[in-house]
Length: 343
Ligand code: C2O
Image (tube, rainbow, N blue to C red; front, top):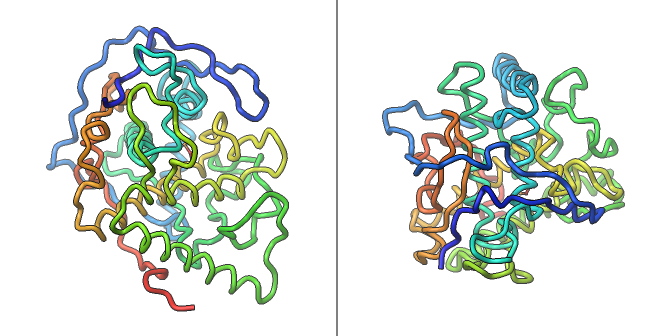
């Protein structure tokens, strides 16, 4: 059966998996009634997400203004920066059971990874747009699948900016991103820099080719109501994405912020990273002619809950998340330097 929305009133403590400590990640609206999500009108403006390394000064200023406003909201406001970050903990560190069961709700490690994060970013973006009164506002993405983007984007590295987070691995501030990075690896130097870039591009090409006819390889394997996330059910897209979390976050436990589920979304770069993951799903889907990746109702009818940009609690279904344009956003067209790359 498909996942049911959680019972908000039964939220409980979650667990930080690095320290095993109990943490509070319940939303401030546990008694709310929720209604069905309605996708935005097709007459609404299409928000265009651009690469972080290509934003103009005025676009950076808009983004900073929106984040600063979100950070200034009271701590218990569901729109506030910390509450928005805590949503990640809620659904990743076990603050809810799957309704009617004792199985913890977990949206990582299976075919729910991409749709759940798509909605997470969707509401975050629209709330930010509301805060600055701009219905066309779009979040930037960290374009790490192109050589110029294989660095921490500069917009996140200005210590005076609300986009800054001092917990990151400073050793990586100007180093090239290595998709094979493991904690402690030295930065590529000299001719290794070009080799790393090429090997990153080849990895992407391989991921897309291998999974073209088998979406579960890219998206993740099924998870059905009542099941615990099986081992090795995550898709190649999610597996690749884990590396950026580790590379941005500090190399030592508890890996706050980016390297730990509990805290990852406290770093604004999380959303830039996930926007690129979301974009790669869109690229994948368009390569496949936009046929749904799965026709299984256990996927399509699975339901999550979010607090929206109208201050309402809504239940969203996977089936409404399959196309960005249907949610009235899109990605600026960029070259895909990894398609059919030759070594
Ligand atoms: Cu919810 Cu990047 O993980």
